[in-house]
Image: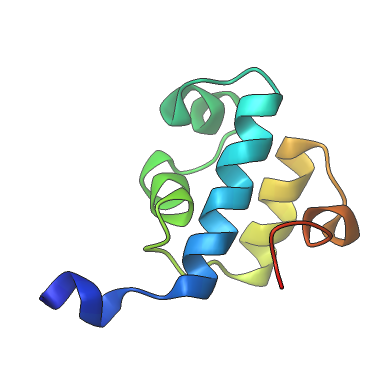
Amino acid sequence: MNKMKNYNPDLQKFGDRLKKIRIKKGYTSVEKFAFDNELSRVLYSNYESGKGNITYKNLLKVTKALGISLKDFFSEGFD
């Protein structure tokens, strides 16, 4: 029950988009992607699982690591 209280569909969409792009880049492992791009593995994992609320500074760092602009990142998966 507590899991549903913290569930946010927008954060889940965000996490799903991150995961899709990461896998497209050839990274099957969240930990490997985070390590290779000097990102916190725990934070990045939380972002992908829809549990973490990313800051703008980290959003810029993550999209840079994914090799995608903010405009392109948000062009899919968000209604």
